[in-house]
Length: 107
Length: 121
Image (cartoon, rainbow over all chains, first blue to last red; front, side):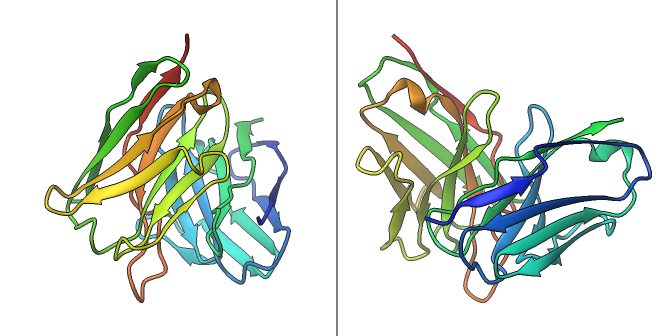
């Protein structure tokens, strides 16, 4: 199984900050890495698919990069509605493992 | 308008069974891969199972293999998850999610609101 290590597990930042979250896969997953945002009491929301493709309707301040084993989610200028938990997930091979999550909190 | 609505959750004793449903509208469950994902209270997301577009292939997380079964009824446009031999570790909010279709790499773009399964004696 492919293990996904996501870091950091938590992050404090201010509105307007640029933040980066990383995921590392235990083996190559090509570009098959998704990023999700989850707010309390809500289902996850797809932000980025295939490492760098922005899902329809997602603001352009969200971007993804990487291939192989190392991936990054960047939020260029944090907005108040961005404080949430973020998960990465590999969809290269089953089981489709998720990272442990990053809780993004207001500083 | 795409919508996924899960149902069937509840409180069940260890060792018992439950069947979850995911009623879909806005697309056919026969034209996309379909997934179940779960989330234990206060924990992260865990992928559970996947059904292929033609229904011939089903994949499971090791934690549920041999106990859970994914199925669908195309005429009812509904996805199911049969949960057998439940343990307390299966307590979670269960989500269904849309997968991919041929030539389109995006998946997990639509999710239901989840149905809560609580395994307790």
